[in-house]
Length: 315
Image (tube, rainbow, N blue to C red; front, side, top):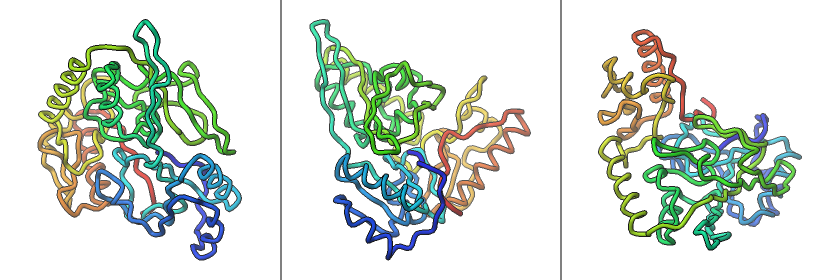
């Protein structure tokens, strides 16, 4: 998920409805972002559009460019905190871009699977496992969509997207569909440097293996994650990136902040690098808690923690 452009124009909704009359997909106005984030936090989006197809998406880009209105690309909302003022402009919801297909297979057991940006990672894993294709098991238990996973080079101790991605399909800001080879993408820790535009999907290089073994490995990895992390809680995953030396969660725990709470936002008792919404937390609670954690770790450990989650929207 990311913002296309740096525009921040206030929208006249009544007038803008006319401009969006050519869009075939669903359009919602004043849609609460808390309904689309794993934190269950966030103010309203001015406009949320669910493009029906590529032509719809290209038309939307054209309209936004002409009207100088910003676009925010939303995946599954699993690693973002939307501020209480919501998001100005248009939120592009890609949940309906959800096709998966095997692009190619060869006699050596190698296969390429393409998944659109809106595909949930767990669904992709179920697909690959059922077809006896291995390589993506590291993503077991990681929430979110294919688009978001590519955008942030999602991963775990067992691997990252960069290890299996072969090609990324995108739409540039002019509405053209382009293919970016893995060799042309600069991957970093939870980052992928891509051209400006919208991720449409990714092709993954996998290989054949025993389906039961793959499923057993996925089950084991999900079980391990549940033991160590607050899986199922209202959170956005790891809040901070691990520093060059050590682990963010261990540092936060060592300075006594496990269970520390501001409003209904709490440093998880299970894993200190998670902040959980215990019920009615708002973004300002989480932001205050993030500040406390950063200041305490900097003061006592001399380490400046950097955010892994994305904080977006207006106060």
